[in-house]
Structures are given as C-alpha cells and as structure tokens.
Amino acid sequence: ESSQLVTSLDVTFFTPEGQPSTSTNKFSAHVDQNRSDVREGLAECSIYQGVLYIWPAGPDGLSSTTVVWPGSHRDVWPAMMGDEQLARHGKAGMHYSEIQEMCDDTLAQRLAEGWSRHARRGCIPPGAPL
Image (tube, rainbow, N blue to C red; front, side, top):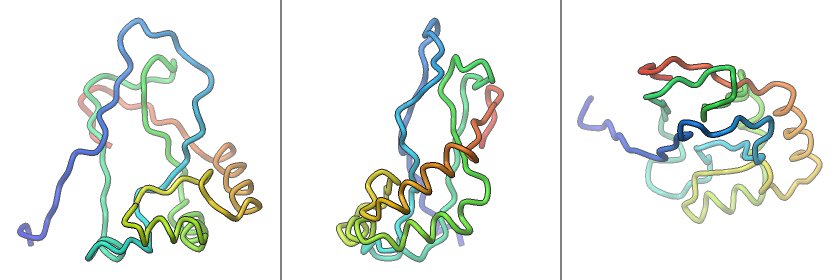
C-alpha cells in the first residue's frame, strides 16, 4: 500500500568535470541496513536502495559510481550483523555499518579481502537508475 511507502534522499555525490581519474579509493565497504536497528520497523522492513545517474559513470574512472558485491546479501550481510560492534551501532539507532568498524578483526579482514576480490564497479549511462 502506498501509504506505507517511505522515500528519502541520502547522499548526493558527483565528480566535477576535469577531475583526474584515480586508481584507488578510501576503503568504505558497508551495508545500509542494520538488523539490530532499534528504530521502530527499520530492522525488519524491506529496503530497496537506488541511484539515479545524471552523468555517466564509465569504465574510464573519471566519475563517481556505485560499487556492489554480487550475492553479498546471502552471506556477507548476515556475518556482519553477527558482529558485536555493529550490533551496538544498531542499538544506538545507526543503520550504516562499515566492515572496518567491526570488532572481530579476523572476520573483518576476511570480508575486506572478499570485497577486494568480488566487488564490481558499476558502469552506468546518464539518466539510468540503478
């Protein structure tokens, strides 16, 4: 029912024209839903995230884009949600959870290595939703 649909704007980002490309980025692998989120209805609701690209995000690395880890919702997200630090974040009402914030260093290292092997940069044409 549409009366229960909530929409919001999270982050607006872009790369200004003429910006040099980069071969590295700050490590920020994260999930945007925390199973322990104490805010009413957020821990168990279905969340669909999308992005609308105004400018192209091509393979040349000259623009910002989204990076995804295919299939990570099946095993990576549940593993992250079992981490004590990320559970504390959720209980404080924070949904954003980064791998580098985990208290289980062994698991965080394994997930970071998986991210570097399996994550894929999206190449998105202008005007396309993701």
